Image: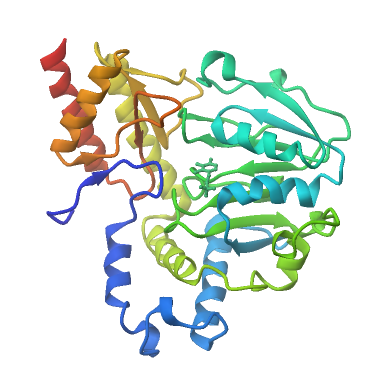
Length: 360
Ligand SMILES: *Cc1c(COP(=O)(O)O)cnc(C)c1O
């Protein structure tokens, strides 16, 4: 790591691979012989068209997206999809929502405007510290889709399995996309805001089964209609060009690191080290229950809010930043995305042990 950089545990926007930042810097003033940066180029230009097509193809390869599914590069964040999904897929019927955290709860509330939301499960009674097993899910016959969030960024839980449902699966993968292989063909739609594990903020990736498009409610804005967006190859209006370019650099880096299989090995190792430290600790404890724990966002606390704050300050002085938990969850959160080097995890563990020695 370059000397003046910190270990950044932010949940998002979050750390990007240093090699990607270096390459973006090298190409900043003159991208591909154009004499300008990608930020300055028309989205209809030949150079950008090439970048756009390549990025799509790289993502299709990285996630092995089948030809049945279209890849869309959109704006509006994951939150816009909370509305776009029911507008396009609900047809005024019923959809099942698994509420296992903050973002799935928000998505369910938004969907209520467009049809009937059936809550398939709700883990709020235990502070969203676990993922329900398949038999706990209450499914509606004839539901338009089953919605869940694969990794709960705020509370630090992660679905250890892909739920089974007759209805098409719709999944928010904002904080775990590209961290492991996914059988995309099993999903009707999956999507992710890019700023957690893919690229800078401003890009949302939607991967949708083309067969599901074409049923949007009549008042759906054009810019939110999957059918229209597919027809225009994400270029109904200006796409987030710079973020798409950054995603292409991240995908090159990911390929060099062994692809999503390589990422999965690394994420397991990072998380295993940190949870082992937490399970041994006499001061810190993990929030999520074993079997439901997230490899991407590790949530933990001491049980004393002042001591938590003191630890966050102590770590920041050592160049380990953004460890404060989300305001609705409290405690600490270490986000261990693809770009977090193993040395960052080891440095965090050392820092926790040192703090513990002084406070137990
Ligand atoms: C961050 C996050 C969101 C919200 O993303 P925006 O792009 O800010 O709308 C939604 N879902 C998950 C799982 C997230 O981590």
